Image (cartoon, rainbow, N blue to C red; front, side, top):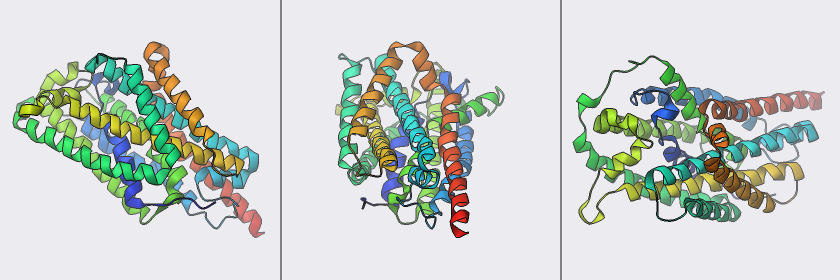
Length: 364
């Protein structure tokens, strides 16, 4: 089956947009400590570990010579190498996308209910976001990638406006020494950054549809993400000081401190940008689910798996808001980090080993 291909720049722009605001939705409850400045070190460590986690994906992408019979994504390679036993790989990816998407959607709904407190149902906003993301996934990866390029411009302009205004409030006296509360917060923060990074799973499923210098795009993504998140954390710490520790979403508080005459506070800009980034993330992950189901059926990519995934995502997010147990599971950084490592490195490594064994058998 001939699929739409996008450029490396388009793919990693979509990954940057879908990842960035979910990542910087930090607070002391999830990072596990009072010093928000330590999260810069956590972010850098997460990027370094991410480079290692992605290695098995690159190994799988180099196995095109193995007689797979169906395309080159990790789920397709797994099914081509292990037969029906390989179904565990696309199913594992699908469950991960469901968990990661539900976590991101639940986090945004919690943000709406606890911080924004709109005068209408937050559940309706969540449903609308899911519906728009569903439409994008049904239209295909090229449509989502083009939208991500537009969202990137809005993201940079909106954040640039906020950052430029709050920079005048920056006070070096608010900066606290690194590691003054120990290293446990740094470790938990690193797990949190990895937990909210679905890039590795997306690469395993969608990278064969990407043309161009993928390695260079991946390095650009890491550098751009680390720089953006580090700058944001530095501004939060320098502008809010200890006040940031008491806030559920300190980035939103930072945006609410800004005023531009007729625009007044810019917190609405932050909320709107987060919604657009979340739509891109959900659309990419839902489209990846189409590829996962295709690897098991070998037929034309069906649209019904996307509909099922969208419904389950919405139900999971709504359930998380009303059930503390489900919320704790979805937002637990250690559990999500483990799932990220398993899908990002474990499943591709298993697939690569199976493809290698099959290739040797075919050679004999």
